[in-house]
Image 1 (cartoon, helix red, strand yellow):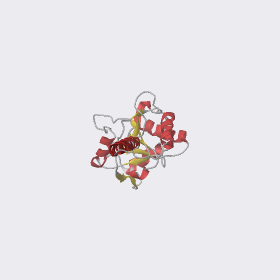
Image 2 (cartoon, one colour; image 1 turned 180 degrees about the vertical axis):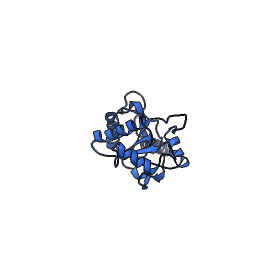
Image 3 (cartoon, one colour; image 1 turned 30 degrees about the horizontal axis):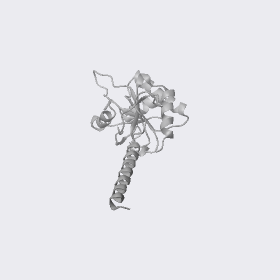
Image 4 (tube, one colour; image 1 turned 90 degrees about the vertical axis):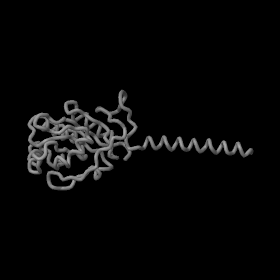
Length: 204
């Protein structure tokens, strides 16, 4: 066979393999293949592709270390609460607890504190006990400096004297990407459980 023909065939094969590799890489970037907009399998709003959940290592209400990385391989339910809240936060805690009940099994469920230094280990334990969420929901506690990277990464405005924090749920997939978001008023146990079940069934 003519040498030029052989070289041309080689180059065609090389370009084809490169295209396949690029396509496979884009499908396996950890952000999932779910398109935003109409036709989504999810009940909540699909997050933009490639938005990682923040990696952190802080303490929970029992003084135990908690980090996002330790939950790789399972979906994570994340919400944002403060321990002295008397209206939206108890409702959010009950929605999270109801979602786990509806799912039929517990997955990691985190409540990122939004009102330090008032959110203490003691007040977090009291809040969880009052909401009957002890052992189901884990508070992430720290100083404003500790928690600011989490608020920023999850696009949350914390509690202030003049502003109520954002009531929101975010679902993180097995590979640590933010996949689905809910304003607090749109989330129900059924909807959250539906989307968590989809994330459970995805490849890790």
